[in-house]
Image (cartoon, rainbow, N blue to C red; front, side):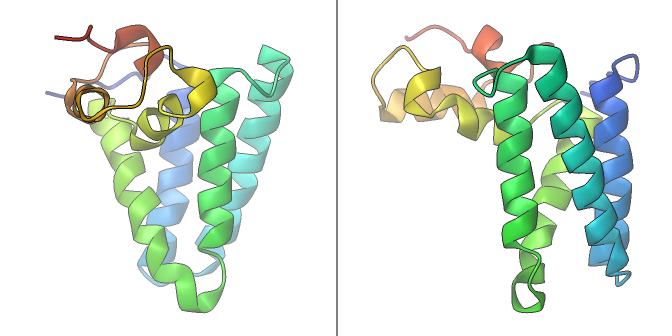
Length: 139
């Protein structure tokens, strides 16, 4: 089911970013640099808005930026397919793998790390807001 959150600024940031990432993986290498620049801008915007590096939206954007920077060297650019496909999933379906990964960091969770937590984190349906607000309870 589609979850197009086109009324939120963050959705538009991700849409523009994935457009340039898509151009990059299809052969226009400058697209990677533009996507990194947009992500830096987005990170600064959310940092100013949230006023904390510990804020979940800031952590997600920082993790995303780190992934883009890791993939920047030419021999690693195949890695760009991961954020490209993941960002399309975010844009179309509201499923953000990076947010789910960040939610598993020790300071973002209130329960012990377990196979059940992993299952609920990655297989729960997308929710409006963020995964920390919509993770189903333990079974």
